[in-house]
Image (cartoon, rainbow over all chains, first blue to last red; front, side, top):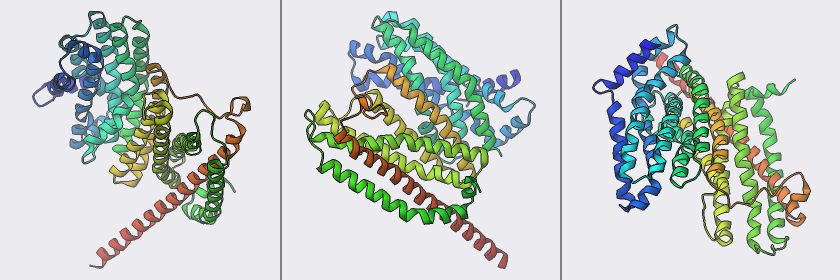
Length: 218
Length: 247
């Protein structure tokens, strides 16, 4: 399992792996928002948590195709499925690697981008905490969407259509926490709900993903 | 003899072929009488005027939008567990019907909301959940279209239907957390104290029965079409193989 994790991370971080691309994509989406709604600091402060969350969803989405697709094409996935490790564990490892190369770096640079969006100071800890506990759910749910569209021609758009609706609950609770903190309300309930949701998803999603992968490589 | 007998496509075709005309007639009767009664023989509401009458389309279609998804979930589970092809095809057949019911509910709601709430659309939990449900229907149908191998498509969409059910429900309660609503509470229940007034209630029940029957007939019809398409494809494949063998 550790070897698989190392393999996944190496593949993602080496040239052409695309880990950096997800991050650049995140940056660009956030950069586009002020152009869309105008440069007034108060306006930007109001939409800052939502913007960062939506950008996080999208950059998770665009990096999903590398989770199973290349392994499926060159047959590594069949080899992995035959290994003594259960497929559920393989899926969980791959989703974890996806989070380590997408969700985690994104959480780290989010406060920097929040600064450019003029987010009120009180909201920073909550924003980082919510992104930190919420983005693993995005990777684990993304695994379901990526598995469903495996091997399809023009599957990329469909992955988005199938995956993004699953992100709604996480988005609602995750973004709510920082918004509440910025408005001086209690931010902890939303954060705890985000955490609860993530834990449930991390526990259950690998089983669904593995079941779907078994259909795909049958 | 058990219900599972009708999982056999031939048996299903025979039974549904006999049921279809009867069902169609009762559906037309329920909808015709119910809508006519509702539109022309019920009084205007003292606050809402005649706009109240859109209830005869809005409530039944909203009800069936949710029930159609539940039926798809049950059919997907049956397909997963017992692998009856009719079940998978019935789930596929129900999806567009459910999506259209969802759309009708959203549109009639908007048309009613404009004079009553003064806006076509608000991000109210109920409205938002229906939009989310609509998106789930679209994704489900898109996946059926995208996967070429029919068996694999049935498996994948069944999996999506189960995952989607969990998240549709989760979103339903998550949006409550996100925004307080403008939509009124339920207007129908078995507890008659809380119901709408009787004059509206009886025609509404008739229309709801009509919508349920309409859904059943449409799903039967579409399932029959799907089965025939399958047979056609099997025949074409066989003809192709024979032609290949001959050369």
